[in-house]
Amino acid sequence: MELGSLRIPLDMQLKLNED
Image (cartoon, rainbow, N blue to C red):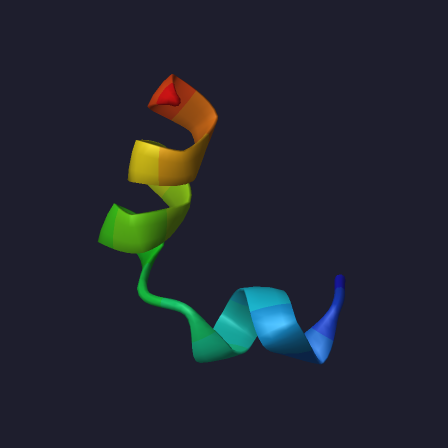
């Protein structure tokens, strides 16, 4: 797991995944 990933909210991660 990258620290950046933890830094970004899960909601943001889901948005990035959707994009």
